[in-house]
Amino acid sequence: MILARLSNAIREQNWFAVAIEFVIVVTGVMLAFQITAWNTERQDAARVDQALERLQLEAEQNIRALRQRMDANSARNADQAVMVSVAMSGELPDEDVDQFERAIAQLMYFSRPPVQQSTYHALEQSGDLALIADRELIVEINRYQGRIGWVENQHGSFRRGLTTFTDTLDDFIFHEPTGDPAVTRARVDFDRLNADPARRSALVQIARMHAIFAHYVTQLEDHTVQLCHRLAAETGRACDEGAEP
Image: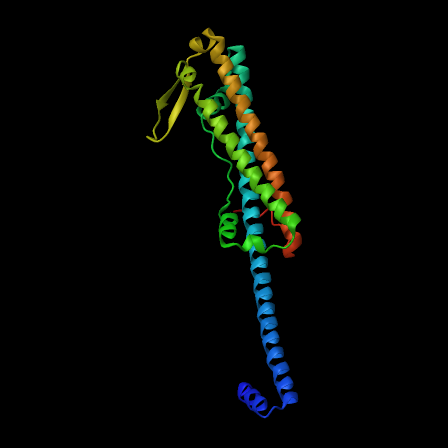
């Protein structure tokens, strides 16, 4: 319709009408572009809101998982303190038997930090993270991911370090079967343990490595809480730290 009127106005050399039709066409195109831009901005804003909410949920899950690990680490560190005391004294009081055996049984149990990154990676791959306009928030999110990567690298280093003690442990620790085929009971040959200071030193070093890595987990939990509250400031929903997973 507009093109037909514009064609007729040109043939009739009605330049005023031509100008009017031209303005109408340009205005319509500009308005269409503006509406498209508004729709895109609104959709992007919605995607950012969803991304931040999902990241906050993942941070909350990580807080709960890390706190469970911290509780387990505290109990393990207490058991290993008893283990070190027994190893250095060469005596095992009856009241320390349970803690000592638990510590021995868990010497080589050294798992990764219990954190999830699936939401972050999915948002990164989809490009939704790039839509976040707050550069400081992006820096904080990336810094947190870097912290996770560093802790996991430390885990790998510590795990390799623990394997160096395997032969030493085999010299004085053996496992007995129990009523459960999947469970063994750790036993210690005290004569062999006490005969070589290197064996006692191995227990001390392993306990030290566990304690250091437990501290890394505590630091990661603190960083996770900080990120969760930072995200909460954006989503408007308080960071839920206490609910059970």
